[in-house]
Length: 241
Image (cartoon, rainbow, N blue to C red; front, side, top):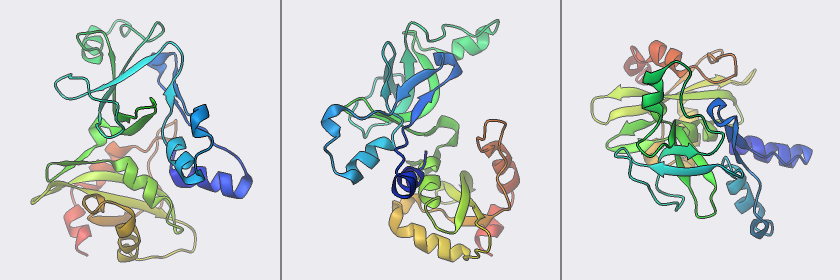
């Protein structure tokens, strides 16, 4: 959930939004974004930062993050790796699909979610991106979700999606695909100038494309496969128009 949306509900309607996260394979809840008692006296901006995370594990479910070699990573809020989970009601295999089952579990029986995440010392999980949606630029990983969340706080942007596009120098670079609000007409340079101080330099998109709407599936998730198919072939020309 974009941090701007959480803030807007709080400021405009006095509603406290709490995140949660799960998967069908977890039956289905795994995380709940309830603050700890020790965090209730924090400054509003610090509490907002925590609420922007997906939450802490519910009773009975364990989480960890691992690197590409399967080595467990520290819960320091900085290291990020693939999110793995296990518990009494977490699936053990996919029905009549041994190939998928073999790919979904590591040698210790942890279910591999396919989400790249961090876990902080208080146990709060923050999903950085889906593994397939991460952008590798000049040897550094960039979260498409982070760029989307910041872009959605722009007053003229109604919807946003970010994909990786090929780049001769950096390998991959982020491309921002935005839907503008009615009667708004910022230029692409206007958008990039607004984003520049709000994102790490490496995460600033190389280009912006405007569309009427983003393709989504039945549950509302952006179909990034469709965005990649449509934009990867002509992004270079678009970036230099």
